Length: 78
Image (cartoon, rainbow, N blue to C red):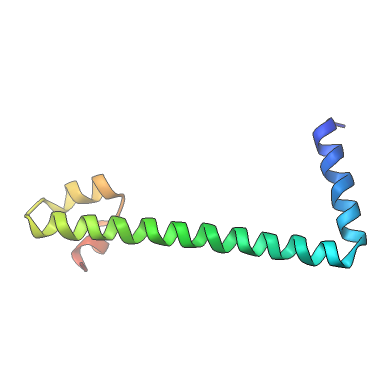
């Protein structure tokens, strides 16, 4: 077995046997997930802001969609 995988498996076994470590590990996982969701949400809002500004100055929806990754439908709702 790969040395890195074996090390990870050993650490996971230690964490699983200790309720305090397991709770800490779960809290860390939730915090990491929350942070990722927050960053992704901010990126989505920034794309919408850029699209709104481009639409306001008359850039065609197709070009805005291509540049921002938003759908034409999403841009039309802005």
